Length: 249
Image (cartoon, rainbow, N blue to C red):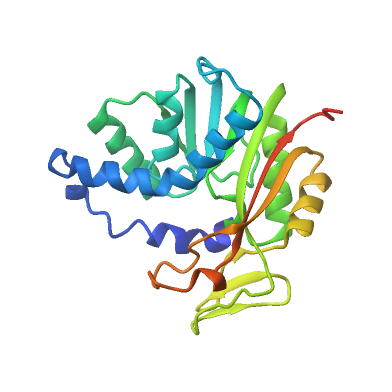
């Protein structure tokens, strides 16, 4: 993952130390809410479809990968989960620690590259916080998925919400989309926008078993942050899936 580490580290450079202050508390809460909204809806939709009890997350050991400033960690913690958040960006983890102190949270945060072997322990639930599509090469993606499998408890579940290719996808002029579905910006690979079949095949190749998969053609990812009003029908669509370490059937 180090090959595109600096691209993501740079995205946190605008958050200077004074941003993490009590006077900014409402602005920080809004920022975390906006960055968590899609995954929160995914989790709540899954809860309804599979009839989870209201206290299902209480006491569960939970890992959030690509946690950024920890918005999803805070949401899961509010549901009673015991949460560990990891991110490759030192600036993201530093910010997450500051926000944790500011709001009196208890989640644990660690700076780690999830494409490399890590001894993090075992988890009941693992939530990919939009990290999967940031891993542009197939070896990185498979290493990552196999890492998740190794950390999942026997009855555990992995949640992934990822960008997905569709025929109407168009990219702004400074971006380039190559034949391997990799999105480049200024000669740096920044995303893998695979179609749903390729994503499904990669997950299976990693040894995980898919027990839920939904291509969300109505929900578009905002892939180009410089263009706030970029037409949604040109943006990547969304795939949501959950996986188990062992065959559930």
